[in-house]
Amino acid sequence: MELSCCAWALTGREKDTLNTLADIGFNSIDIQAKTFQNPDAQSQIKDLGLALSCLAMSFNMDDGAALDSTSPTGRQTALDHCRAALDQAAGLNIKTTYVVPGEDPAGLPHFSETMLQVADYAAERGIRVGIEHFPGKALPTAAGTLEYLADLGHDNLYLLLDTGHLQMSKEDPAAIIAAAGDRLTYVHLDDNDGDGDLHWSLLDGVLTEAALSAIFSALGPSPYSGPASLELNPNLPDPTAALAESRDITLKYL
Image (cartoon, rainbow, N blue to C red; front, top):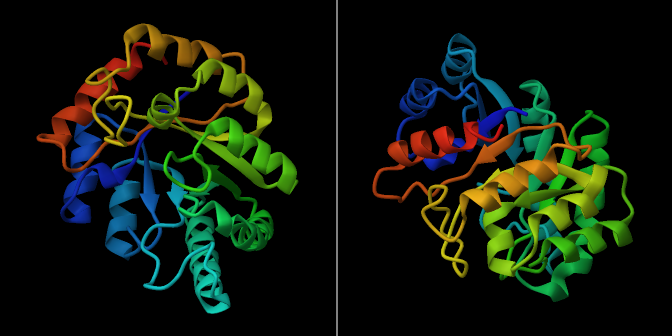
């Protein structure tokens, strides 16, 4: 299993972000839609030998766009955004993307309608689409998200697992990994106080070494073969140091 890093853990110029992540020692990164699109950035990514593992689709949408919008126009704008993000991913040979659900459970029928179209478009390009379980949103638990995916029944919709979110929803990572099986498409690593979505450095919150070891022990025999990706908060006191520290911690278990 490889280790990746969500590039949005750092702010500032894209050029500086890429150099910093490479200097820390990352060989793989994740990006958001509409970022790292200019030729200079793409050339730098190649020069630094960075692989691109995942693209976060639902970031940087236009105002009024939402995958679960009650407005057909809002949903269409969000769909167009995701299609453009998938074209971006295809052009960069990124095989995994994901979205974050909306906040209102009542909007899930609209979300489902849009996601089925997104999944079809992605499948034509050989790209997987993950849906992230997110406490406080319409799909707050990983177990509930797996049930939602089973009910939706699309072959190209998967679970993105976030370990920090599992801490908030009080779910057992090993049980979720086992239940997900081949529906698991990506893994985010982060820490928090058990209540807030804080995206702290690993072991700075309620996450323990034993719990982190158990996560990787569960991933070992699972069908999942993709990266584990650090997703840390860019507003940490020293995000560069936090990434370096979390990388060192994670490498003990990979």
